[in-house]
Length: 163
Picture 1 (cartoon, one colour):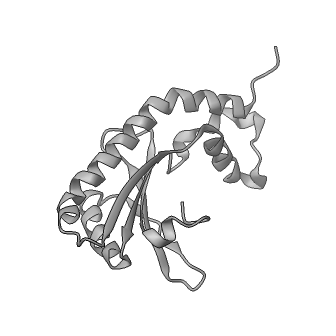
Picture 2: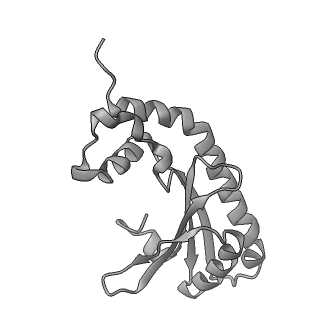
């Protein structure tokens, strides 16, 4: 029987982690929605705030980890050192807001909920902040990295938007 590749090990790990990834995603989405409820209630008729969650797909997770390696190649002799738990964004939530003026308000609310999460803003070519982005771990799960983004609806819905 041929030896298992690093990719095979990581795919197996992904499916072992998947229930935890789903749980972390659901929790993250619920916490974000809950803490934004007062804001939702105060929106004007033309304003919108949408919370969307996503789970990183298996192949995307493996490729993301591969890109972080020197030469974008896994070293088969160090197969046991690779883990999808190293990824920051297995679970994700995106908060889309219109108008853009709501972004700082949403950021203030969520920073209070996730104060220990690390900021990783998405900057445009001109250095302007396109999206607030943070990563960390949900209170109930140390193995699954989560990420939330706060982005203008007009930026977040176009192809090639920050993810």
